[in-house]
Structure formats: structure tokens, C-alpha cells
Image (cartoon, rainbow, N blue to C red; front, top):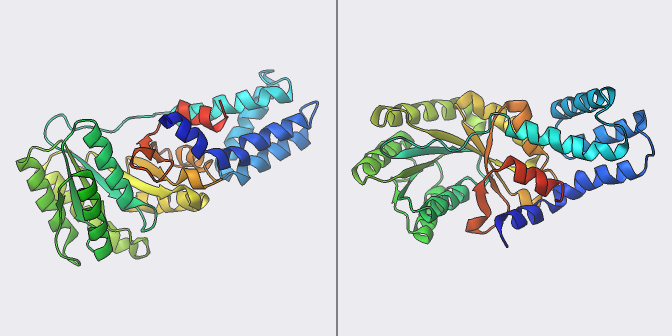
Length: 304
């Protein structure tokens, strides 16, 4: 199966919860009336698109009706698809790559969102692109995080820079940056602690890591990626809002899309937070994490 087919399969539950329900609503009405629009609005909210984003989409639908762009219930689905693609592609940008020296990716997110697994899959992806990769275990708060990253390092054949559990994360980042420069690697991916409940500590920790990295490699980190678990729906948006206060996030990695009916959260994240979704995960396999493509996502979501 190619990635598009895996994406389409992975979005099965979300499609049943969103686009299939929209189709069923449309079939039930001969004309567009308030009841139809109310049902449509409820469906979008229930699919975790989010209240703000649903308001935005419904405003566009009502304008479309006034302008005669939508004349029958059948026109609603293609109109919504177009609106969703517009939301997702607005300001869409790819991973920032350093012009010279290592590209540094800082990866943040709460424990359990799939952060360390994502880092392993990113390492495999870049290695598959012919790039040399180095990993840094700067989530020193949990011994399991260091061990897990080492397992991924062994699996992907990528070296891991680590210190003892409980050591200073910025010191790990410093050693990793020095090693990345010395070894002339293309990509350095740094794991960080996911302790949102101690937000001020996390903020100070991330600020210190950013300072250390930026001093050694000007312009680094080139990306600060926030890993979110799609199965948490609207809670993922709340987490993203909290993390933006702790670090300047450049993009989101949305994991576990294949296990949820809440995939509409992709639209909510982009619309509400103006934050690009840069990577999506639709399965357990190493190859199931891929760069996000808005048009492919919309096509898969609408079952094309």
C-alpha cells in the first residue's frame, strides 16, 4: 500500500464521523434549510473540528448560499472540501533546512503523545532520504525515555547522545550540538521532557536548551515540532495553546490518526492556532509517519 492508501485507510473512523455523516444529512434534504444547516454544524463539532473553526466554516457556507455558489444540498460537500483545503494550505510550509551545518529539530510534547516514537520515525525517514542523523536524549527526567530513544537508535542505525537520568537537559543538547558539528551530520533531532504540569520548569528548560543550541549553531533550532495525539481531539488544541507559551513552535506532528474518529482536529489546529501540521502518523510502522500534504489529506478525508 502506498502512503495515500494508508492515509485513506487510517482516516476511516474520521471519515465515518465527518464526511459520511455529512453525506447522510445531505441525502435527507431536498432543499437547504435551517434544520440542514444545524445538523451540518453539529456534525462538524462532533468530529472535533472545534467550535471556532465550525463557526468559520458555517459562515462560509451561509455566504456561499447567498452568493448562489451553493444552490442544492449536493453542493455542500464539494464546497466544504474546498474550504477545508483552503484552511489547511494557508501559509503551508515545509521543514526548514539549515543552509550549512546541521539542521536541528527540537521535539516537544506531553508524555504519551508518541514523542519518542515520532523521533525514531523521523530519524528513519531522513536516513531513507540519504541524510546522516544524530539523536539527543534530552528528556533526562525519565530513564525510560532515554532507553526508548536508544532502542530507536539501534533500530534505525542512528547514534544517540545521552547522559545519566536526571542530568541537565541543556548539557545533553550542548554535547549533541558539538557532536553534530564535529561529525558533520545533516540532521540533529533532540528529544525533550514532556512535563506540562510543571509548565514554568518546562519553559525555563526549553529556553535554556534554545539558548545553548542557538549559541553553537546560529539560527538553531531550525524547527520546534510539537507532537500531539489525535485521539485526544480538542484536548490536543488545549495542549498546543499551553506549549506555545513555553516555546516558539514552528509546526505540529499529529500522531495516531488511524485510531481516532477525531481527525477533524487537524483542521481545528490549523484554523484556531495558525500552526502548520507538518507531519502525520497513520499507523505503527516506521513508514507510517510522513510529511503532511493538505490536498492529499482532504482527498482522503472525503474518500476520493
